[in-house]
Length: 215
Ligand SMILES: NC(=O)c1ccc[n+]([C@@H]2O[C@H](COP(=O)([O-])OP(=O)(O)OC[C@H]3O[C@@H](n4cnc5c(N)ncnc54)[C@H](OP(=O)(O)O)[C@@H]3O)[C@@H](O)[C@H]2O)c1
Image 1: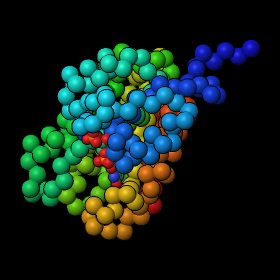
Image 2 (image 1 turned 135 degrees about the vertical axis):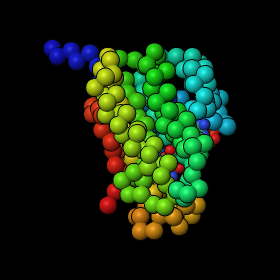
Image 3 (image 1 turned 90 degrees about the horizontal axis):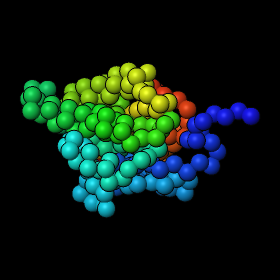
Image 4 (image 1 turned 180 degrees about the horizontal axis):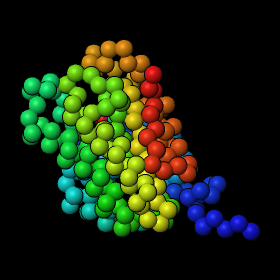
């Protein structure tokens, strides 16, 4: 009898999944999609029983200590500063570097202690390093760095642990707020984006950038 020794790949296995950004647009859609099959631990920033500030490594450590062992972590959060290039400063780039980039990298580094064998990390970037718009140099820089990080981390992670990145285009739900900056970008719904997170968590691939809604 084949013993694959990988419970996360067995049909019907109920994973314990930490969802950072659970109250957000993408987070809500993932929660809806995965909640029947898995135990989801929703983590917020300003609300919820368990909270974290991904820009603060100590806060990340406290969150992991409160949760204990887990099978998968999904991060659907990350702030960057949007401004025209001539208005950008080192401090403004630092926002994206500390929050969206190192925030997600630190979720991986600190999570290694508690993640089960064959578990997975799924991080979030966005389309703007492939299809830049004005005022998005920080976003493009951070997204590109996240792509490099997950590709290299995938071959460096121990114990069969996987890592992927979801890179969505503009969301339908965000069109009213930011759509005017994204002329010609055809938006996708958060529900469609949630499929990529499902593929990352329940599938077997690693080191993959799931591009959702690219032309
Ligand atoms: N929306 C789009 O069109 C789009 C397109 C491509 C990529 N993305 C990327 O996808 C990610 C999520 O986007 P979204 O539109 O779903 O965001 P959103 O609706 O603004 O939600 C953000 C989530 O992140 C949490 N959060 C905020 N600051 C945090 C911090 N310092 N530490 C931990 N959690 C924090 C919020 O928690 P609280 O509610 O508790 O504050 C909320 O749950 C972002 O990285 C964004 O760049 C978005």
